[in-house]
Length: 216
Image 1: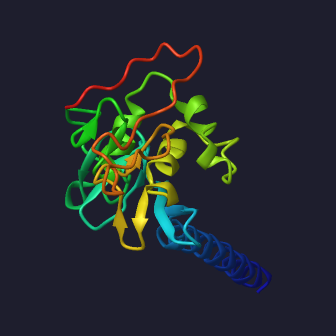
Image 2 (image 1 turned 180 degrees about the vertical axis):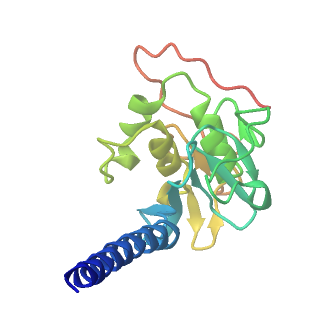
């Protein structure tokens, strides 16, 4: 009689232990597959023109190789490696463009003025310079931003957005090349009161030996 009681007591304890172990296994598996992954954190830059959202800076965080990227429209993006691609070719998990040459694109950019027609190409061309970060972050028009802890990619993204100095009227620009990553002089006015073709020229940086990027 006593032996039967001990066997039942042992079986009951074993059942409890097995149940607890199974519960722990199930909860671990559930947590592993259902904890949401942190996909993106965003940082928005606001331009001088009254709170307009200039661009979205996004950093993926779900894979080994992640990229921050900026875009000003629905078609193109440029990542922090300098690669430009269409939105459909961008890796949705990492935020990266395909690492295919050319890496830095200066298409639609003026070599003398460092101004470009397209925001994404402006950022890519800006990144092609050897070390533009310090001289760009010190531009007068960027002093309203706190760029002390920003890297070259972030500085280029802010610099390349069009700004009040490039706007002629509310919805028009002084030149199609209004995305600039170096400081500009005030525009030279033509005989009819309009800007001349040599609108965007830049102040030389004392002690700078950097060469201008070439068109690509």
